[in-house]
Length: 385
Image (tube, rainbow, N blue to C red; front, side, top):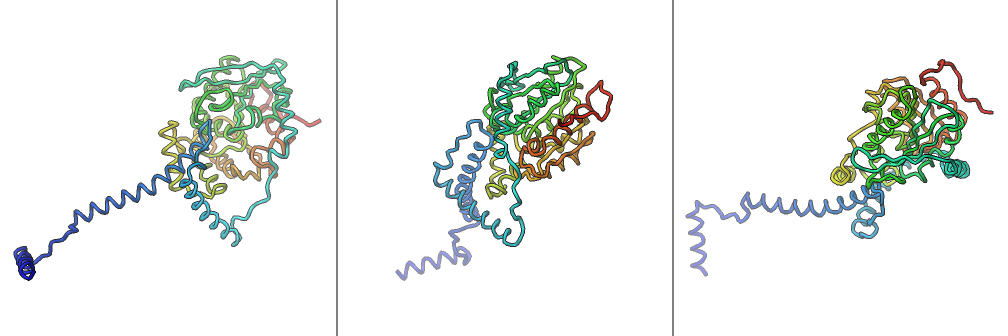
């Protein structure tokens, strides 16, 4: 044993007195890389799982989620949710972020909505189909005015609404009586239109462009087309304003539209899910690019409003906690064209026309009359009986 020790010391001396380092720098680097790789796998897989489920819940037409069947993903989501909820609770205790009084929502007007929907369903409508720029079969209802008219309203419904006409259920009969032709498209991935993914206006704006071209071709040069949307439909209308619309499009009516898919997701994740945008929303955005062919920051209404030259009527509920009224104010400030804004102070999301029906209808009719070609540009407007 003593001889072995001498041989070892002799070997050390022959190496210049330096110990042989089992963890040389290159080996340390390799170990660090492996450890980081393992950590990345453990972190990335749950984040991907949660983000993929968020994407499916938000954008897939068939949005049945398997998240609840994945106990590991569920546990991680609950942990993140619990941390964020505790932070929110502490903020509220300090007087920040107190819950505001709720506005009047759809549940407060069920009778009016069902009555309007039933009226629309009972009308004799033309069923129109066309093929989108990316090969989807799109559908729409067309309800002509009973008298001769040069005014056409294209009504763009919102996100996963209860029936294609539900958002406009309290308005369709009124618009019909005012002598407007009505085109009610089924947005892609809704109703009778094809599509696997909802694109939050990014691709729908091109569908709307095609519908406007169809109406312009059907009615000719002298028609007055107005694009009206609620919620996602409003954002679709505003995003379409950044495209080359037919000259017959005279005005845009945007009721409670968001500024971009990214902005609304950030808001909803924080308010309803208490989840951080990083890394979840970034991962969901990447998944969306790979699966649906668009990303959440690809288009914004603010960018469209900067180049828009078509008059816009902005409308929003003052107590909208789903799409904040501030988003319409931002769109209003960004708009370079003639513009007006109407805030229904007691309305929640999408209910301005129900909470303040007379003021809402007056605003819309005045707007349509003012910007239609061939009128006298007077102060003529709808008056309640």
